[in-house]
Amino acid sequence: MRNQTPKKRILLRGAAAALALCMVLGFTACGKKKAPAAIRVDLSGRVNTLDPQYCTTTPERCLIKNCMEGLMRRMPDGTVTEGCAERYDISENGLRYTFVLREGLTWSDGEPLTAQDFVFALRRMQGMPQTAARERFAAVLGFGEGETLGVTAPDERTLIIRLTRADPLLPEKLAEPEAFPCREDYYNGTHARYGNTLENMIYNGPYLIKSWEKSEIRLTPNSRYTGRTPAENTGVVITLGQDDAVGRFLAGKTDCCRVDPITLGQLTGGKASLLTFRNGTVSLLLNQNAKGTDQLALRQALCYSFELQAFAQSDDLPDPYEYARSIIPAAAKLFNASYTDVTARGFALGTVTYPDGSSTSDFRRSDQLTVRYHAGAAAALHQQEKQQEGLTLLLPKGSPLEGFCGWLQKQWLDHLGLVVNLAIVDADTYRTRLAKGDFTLALYSYTAGDELHTVFRHYGSAGSAPVRCSDPRYDQLVDMASASRNVTDAARLYANAEALLADQFIAMPLFYTESYFAMAAGVTGIAASADGTELFFAGAKREG
Image (cartoon, rainbow, N blue to C red; front, side, top):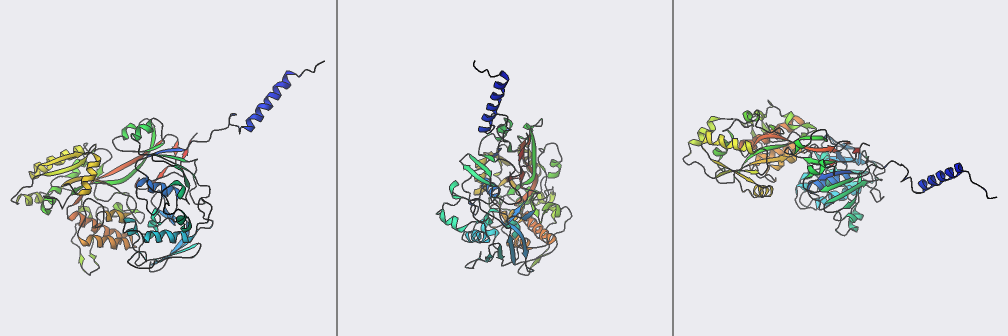
């Protein structure tokens, strides 16, 4: 008689076989919890290089700061703390910095990271042309003509940086990509392709770059990173330069994108949380090199012929804008304090002594820099024999301040009898005309963050602003402020520089502005720099 297998035993065998199959397949079909998807972020701009010593665009610097780390690092709240450095000491005269690196630092290829890697990085910067990045480190011995570099590594964990003059801002400068480490043997092995392709780059930060295409870059956690902020997610997918970022965000295609004041209203009903930054200013630029506005009396009259605060208090000013008392954005910090808070209303400018021994105390006080109506300035203009013609106010298309410009036109007509045309142009034309100085008047939006000295140098003789202060005292004031180690003294020097800029009536503060990043519901932990230009992804998480 043939043996019969009970039905119950057949069922048990079937269950055992199914369980074994699940184990072979890694539980993929048996209810294993799916790994969370990568965080998806939209960024505008382009990425041409991953070389930290040569990166310039905002997305490049954002990527480098997520994939690499310097001696120091800037936290999202704007404070500067140790990165690769475990600690550092400053000599009594401020001319010698000694950094001790943390133990166990490694590159993403497994090789040790040593103090010599920072020496080589600064040596590379020393050999650069006279760029803004190199200018930041002008106080380092060796960055002058024909000098030996004052950066040495007595051992693998010790780095010494010698200066020609005190620079209290050196720690925060060392948190920028230009000062990130570069390993000499690896660099030489790339045969001048370092950072230009994915295969010619190594990292020491929370992430590695897994893939690099024109429109998309993927980050993956760096398993060899031993710093303070390891990646807490499976990776990040960054989309570059796509149109309609907000539309993609609302359609669920991305988890984070920049939002401008115009599209802010689309984010309703709990669709997103916002990272908000009071990081910009809008100023009225008056081109002292253009016909008509080269006259100081006219520039003064144009600035003093309207009551800005009255307009700012009306319902006509769009929500993200606020009456400004300074050309400097609120995000700009001075020794971890807001410059605009330190120099609040009533702050006295005091007397300044310049390197040649001369002194001055005749600038307007910092609470008198804002635009306010002054009938005397308009009366002085009317004494001129010839009234100016052909004045034009330049504005980018789509600006929420178009209504304000119409109000300005009326004020200038009513109080000065001047007809000022309004030129509304596309963004590319606007930028081109500003760069060429092809304007008489323009509304100028400027976004800035932590580095206050960089903001002021923007308007200096070697800066990149469409209008610059040509008075040599301006650059002297900024130099002295950058070298000061006292917050009150530095603030007074910077405030004098701002007053000098305003006294020439070439840049007058109008409004503070805000910018935003939107995060999808359920996504948390994306952090941003104080100026809202750079995002940090290591702490980002997705619920569920």
